[in-house]
Length: 140
Length: 140
DNA sequence: AAACATTTTAGAATATTTCTAAATTAATTG
DNA sequence: CAATTAATTTAGAAATATTCTAAAATGTTT
Image 1 (cartoon, each protein chain N blue to C red):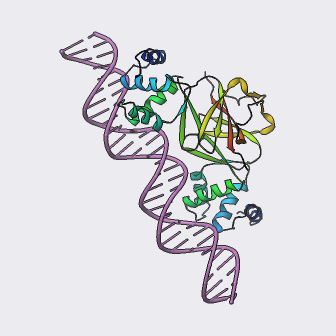
Image 2: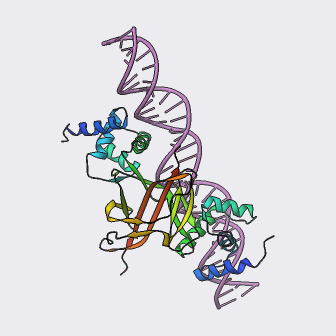
Image 3: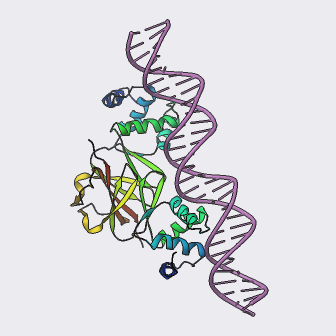
């Protein structure tokens, strides 16, 4: 069975974000962060929670994902119309997107160089630079 | 008033794509291509058509946008969850995305260099490289 | 013009996300 | 530790964007 140790980790994250450690948030934080980096949708996370017998509504999953994103614990990745992925890797990096399967894969920030793009228009600042390398199945 | 000349242009595009020049497709092609490059949603294009007294349903606008995209006349740009933009500029280029207003602006392909990214995983080929520079309003 | 294939259409269906107001839970206070 | 207050969770409704369906209309070919 799953030990209790990982609670510490999840709890730290919540405190770092200034979010009350409620039962739902703790459980979701554990599902999200006690594993290797991942890209997950709200529906998927909700299914995982139900699977782990964590009682949480889909609305709370959405709320929590957005709170975590605002707090910088997650990053929202948009690659397909009508579906948001939440990335537990918040470091500077980019993505491969497999158009066939809809899967995402991280590319470390150092592996891609985006050089000399125009400076941000007046009144704006660059919030982020997203590089998405879209992959299609190889032709025969 | 609008002349009849532009029909030629739109018609050429349809033929080039192997699409029957129906009334709706012609009208939409004119709205899309007889102007400077643009980024438009299905709803927006439908509104423009209604405005121009072109009788066309929203379903047809969606069908047509996808047919044009498949034919390479348009390019779909996904930057926000739950909303697709269609870009009449199909040449190699990238985008500024203004998070405040939701506006898109082209960046010529030559203005950005994406250097030495990992090669495509086995069995895949790079369909496209999207660079999205997300802009936030400047802080005070 | 008749026959056939393609396209268009309205409206229903689906999918994802957000909203709402009531119920619950966590934190604070006495 | 009970009472009070504030934050959170919830189910379900609502909103939003898109796709589907099957019938009607249109375009093409013969």
